[in-house]
Amino acid sequence: MATLCAFNQTREEQVNFLICMDEESSTTKDALTAAQSCCSNSSIDYSALKQCFAGESGQELLEEASKTFNKEFPGHATVPHTFVNGLDTIPLYDELKSRICEAGSKASICDSFNSTLLRMPSCEI
Image (cartoon, rainbow, N blue to C red):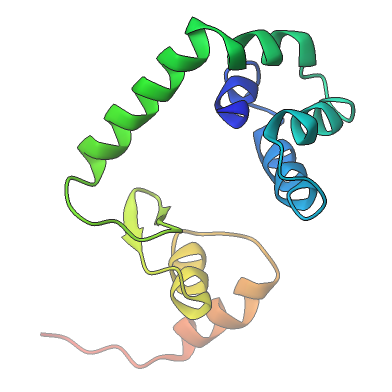
């Protein structure tokens, strides 16, 4: 829930906060301790996060996230579950790379992928 409370404060720093929380989980199992450390490296207000975590707004965010997840995945869902441009994508490197590059990413890893696509023979059906 600490992550939900942090995400509720920012859009710009969500990825960095999530990376930090993942790294902190190797040294602490307490979400609030990890969040405090991660907030110190961002503009996320730890006091507001802690209040959210312990209060009604945190529970509301958790319920909202649960409803969204259950609506999106009414059956069994894998973790991680990945989407690229709204397309359900198998969380394997080659599959993710293909989808991301096909979506038009300018990342250097896509240079070889895009040149391969240009060399592929076309066929008419």
